[in-house]
Length: 476
Ligand code: HEM
Image (cartoon, rainbow, N blue to C red; front, side):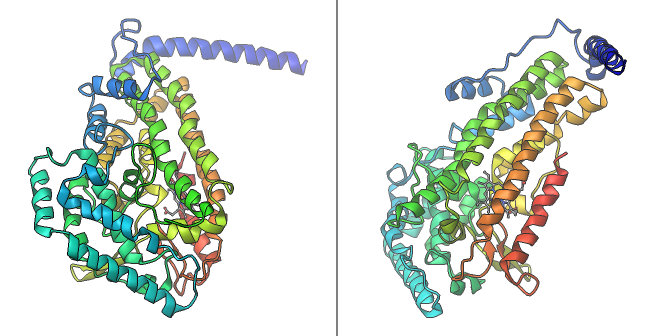
């Protein structure tokens, strides 16, 4: 009796759902979206093709919508014609800039400490020696007026001698040289952490405002785009290593950690294209085509996420080396007086990866980073794209209109981001728990944490966890 009633209810519910879907697609949808009659719409088939095809597809729709134009702009300017950004280093630059590249590489073997010391005197000596050496090489080999002339010419619009991929490589070189000078040695040590004002060489200060203006950022330190993404060559190898000459376990952890980020962006580009197509179709009332694009997104979003799941594992990034040898360098934890107030800057964090900004925006979620931090660490073209995607997010509209199918596909995308956030919270904890007695408690994204209120690692993890839990709760 019970089971036949249950099956009757089930059958009725299927009928109701089918009738509603048809009614919705033919009657409600065109009214809600002011669309052309169903059937007359042009179907844009989602397509997951080669990277070249995806680039061509994005270019082909650049005039169709603001989001498409901004993605194309991001690819052309910041990406140097591709995504993730292309970067070239050293020989690809104007002659006057090449010494920067050579100096980083020449000094790289003397940067890491083979044996970590807890002696403050030994550590400060190492750090200061490296700095003295770098300062001297920069002073002796860099012709500042020639550097300035090149950067001014590019800023005035002449990119002939310094194309975008070379500029990206230069961005990486200057940012990483600044970090190398700031820390003076890896693992980073308490002596350097305690310094809050860094007297950087003029050769590293002069190009920085040009790079700020070019990329639309404001931090003294680097960010994920400069330090990680633009630090890969076309063979996907790191150009400016932190752990040059160190044991393989450390070098490979450095590689796997950094490589995750461009690898995720590479797999994300077709997803960005499909997102924009879904927005275009929604706006045009092409509801079925919009749904197809969403289905493609929800099916493919697992690929960039899988890079994270497969890479942030003990066999590729051992906990024993991550904190001391991979992470510390990417922090900044120093600042300057601005309008009479001391302002401290952080540097690289996974929270700056475009992928999460873009997916969150597409889903209509508020940004994770506040405005101040977005301006400091996220290049302008990335910010503009996310802001536009958020403005055109149609999740709430589809929900309000009662479109179950669109809502379901959106929910599938959201669920995968939620799973990432649950996993990330769980995976981050053991990495953060590893003691690093040579330094004070710190993370790159949140720089120095040790204080009266955060006296130990446990308290630091609880503090950081608050942000991750909050974000998880917001992912609805
Ligand atoms: C051992 C490695 C990692 C640790 C210990 C770690 C730790 C943290 C911590 C403590 C936060 C919150 C504070 C902040 O915003 O900076 C955070 C945020 C975040 N991290 Fe990581 N992270 C790691 C690797 C990664 C990687 C590889 C990615 C991406 C590929 C990533 C993506 C994010 C994102 C997107 C956020 C912002 C919060 C959110 O969207 O849920 N992290 N991470």
